[in-house]
Image (cartoon, rainbow, N blue to C red):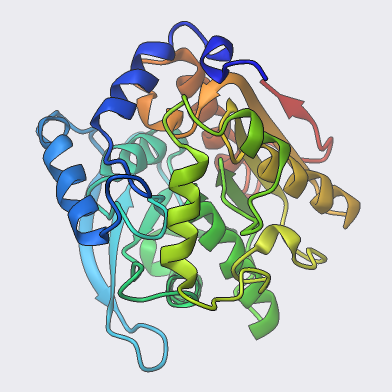
Length: 334
């Protein structure tokens, strides 16, 4: 089997190598979640000091969590009202990090960039993380945030009928799970789902898991450890909220799914698009063959990441009445 690094876009190779060198070897030399978080924080210290994209306003707040759970931290990003007047889309965003790592701060720059590009209000979710809080805690938190945003669209400055759920990696899993819960619980209504290289199937047996097992930042070993932390001993990875890519997808909103060719999760995103289309839902796949897992965060330096961010922004902006019609062709780009 070919070395996946040979398939990386030349512009992406040094970034994938740098991230691989800096990232804790979770599932290998590092098996403790608290240690992994400390190592990642130390490695990310310099990046945290870099200037962040400017938006109109940022507010940290807490909302009630699911029944019996602690309050749920949110960070609300509002676009510049001079550039983006009038009611805008409202996006509930779940960050990645394998359900274990990362937080509101780690994804702050990415969410700011998405807010600036789309003109949408973003509600970033500080969900509970594993292994301290295992499945389904994070999925329940994601739905609680979605439900809250749906009830507060007007107060957030959002347009009615333009509620979006989004997430990257493990956050894409939670975004999809929150939609299943919304369907089960009668709302809120969602206009679009945006999943960026999502983790959707605990079976971890797709072809891209074998093609991209190691060498391009995220590895199959990382994913095994993440799933172990999230599900815990005896956890049921076949549950639809754990593996939403295998769930009944009937009645879910249109989708915009970003995939990277040098990513173990690539085939899960592709399969989700196919299954949505088979269920009668418009779904677009924005595929980047030479990119690796996590590339969207490099939208300031990688042309492919800028392109992916622009297409996400276009899809989100199109949920506002009178905006560009989205998803009817079920097309594929990239």
